[in-house]
Structure formats: C-alpha cells, structure tokens
Image (cartoon, rainbow, N blue to C red; front, top):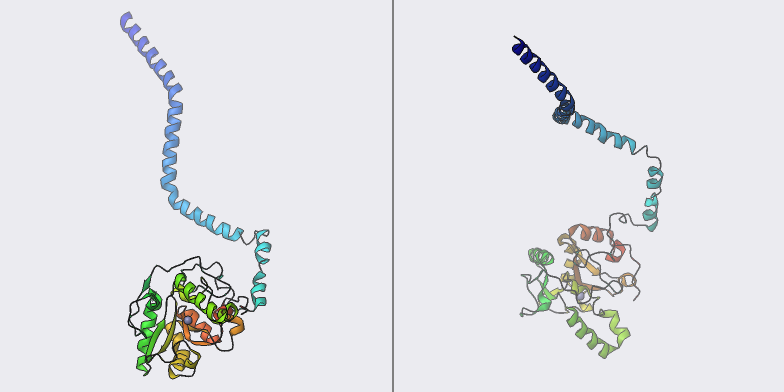
Length: 294
Ligand SMILES: [Zn+2]
C-alpha cells in the first residue's frame, strides 16, 4: 500500500511539476498561438473589413485633400492658368513646348531658331509609293513612314479630283543640306542665301516630314511660279485633310522666316493640321513661339 501511495504521490508531484512547467512555458506559447490565430483570423476576416476600411481610407484622403488648406491655396495660385490666356493661345495649355519636343516627334518644329540635333537622321525613312519628278531611288525621295502613308493617300485623293501631283524633294540629310547651302552662299552671298535656304541642321526637310510638291509635269517645281497653278490651289485647299500644312504661307514671312512656298508641305498629323488650317495660322503661331526674324 505504501508503495502504491508513494507512486500516487510521485504521480501527483510529476503532474504538479508538469503543470507548473506547462504554466511557465505555455503562456508564451499559447499567447503566440493565440495571437497567431488571431492574426490569421484578422487577416482572413479583415480583407472584407480592410476593403471597407480602405475604401474609407481612400475617401478620407479625398475628403482630407480638399481640406488641406495649405495645399489648396498653392494649387490655386497656379491660377497662373491666367497666364496662358494672357499669352493669347487658346491652344496654349495643351501644346507641347517646341524646344523640348523630341526631334522624332511628328509635331517637332524646325525653323531658323529651332534646329535639330547635329546630324539627326530619322530612323523610319521609307520610299513613298507616289510619283516623283525623277526616277532614281535616292535620298530626297524618302519620308518618315507615317508621313509617307499620308502622302500616298493625298496623291490618290488629288487624282480623284483630276490633279496629278509629283514629289520634288522630300528628306534631305544634313550633309546634303550643307552642300546645297554652301553652293547658294557661293552664288548669292550668305545674307541672301539665308532667305531661301536653311542653314544645315535647320532644314525642315531633314525631319523627313516635309516635301516639296509640284504638278506631274514638274513645271515650276519649288519655284514661285508654282503659286496659282491648279495643283497649288488643290494643295492649299486639301492638304489638311491628310495631315499636312502649307508650312510657309503667304504673308507670314515675318513669322516663319521664309517667303511664301506654296509647294512646301509639312506633315504634322490630322489634328494639328486641321487646327492650323482652320485658324489660318503657322506652326510657329500654333506653338505660340517668338516670330522668326528673317
Ligand atoms: Zn521645301
């Protein structure tokens, strides 16, 4: 009996010690377990809640932002929107800065003030499938692909109206422009040459977006006598429909820096072309740029 009793006491002690140890160790374990479980519960349970509270969070900032009085005055200060109106451009707000415009942008502005990066060459030059005044597949037959496609449509459209156009000169590399310009300077002197020929790096032909156009007979190609021909009249009336503008319109020499060139058209895309043609303005005016003086 005493042996049994001892065993019972031993058992009780063991149980008691075990319980005691358990009490020491399990608290953290059970807590962490509990917290784990809770976290798990929270994680699983909250998504729905979180969504709601996020929603609340989202709407809160929205509500809070307007009430961020310190910000609002600042952002209302850029009531500098009063500046664009001053500068007169109803287009001023949405128009990119010509200076920062990428040379590869189809809306790039190149003139006597804004030149291209040295030896810039477009990477997407192609041969438009249209008539030219010459047969050779040479540099000046090329245009950037988007402009080339538009040109093909335009020539086709002209033919539907009984007007047969021909390309005279499209893309021109800086090297070619240098050769041409030097020749003109030699012949007419620099001052005069600059009135009709671009300084190398400042020719719109180097963008691959401009082309000189004549009638299919090539008469008066890139010469002032092209003005008043039925081809010139058709161009003036219809180029915008295909995304082109007459780049150097009559009476705008003080702005563009070039005398009237009814044959020189420039691709800018339909939206801008339509805008420019409707308003009867130049690309310089579109960009609200400082007029190019001679
Ligand atoms: Zn030209």
